[in-house]
Length: 176
Image 1: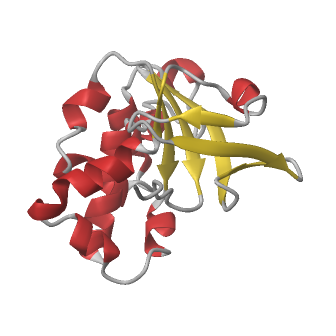
Image 2: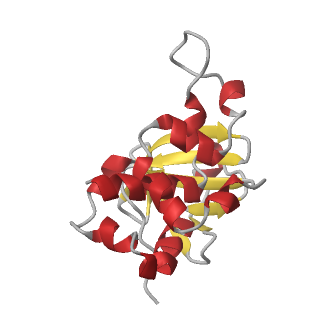
């Protein structure tokens, strides 16, 4: 399970998830948008505490610098619990050095170029990801569903270089 946590951590970093910026120096438990915007997607994901596997995966794939860059990026970020739903051994295998490209392909399938907020996402039928493959988008019963099975559980976590939307499962790119 330790490697799974590292994978989620890397994925979050690679995806540029800005959830880490959710912490603040004041006594309030809810960060303001201004406080969130002071951190990159990667920093926000790291600070969130629920994206350790994603952040580890992003690191293992060598995508930290890219996702810390100016962007903007929209990251569909799976939580640690989402990674835990993958078949046993999947995360460990992807974190092996010889699988760096496969890991990068999966991570970049969670990233869309540009700052695409929820109000825009709900108007789309699909979006082309940074890895070149498309993800389908549907609104069902008031929820955004990607590729017919992955639910967006939180939206519009704003970072200096984009926005993060939190997922309940990991998106796997189409084979081929």
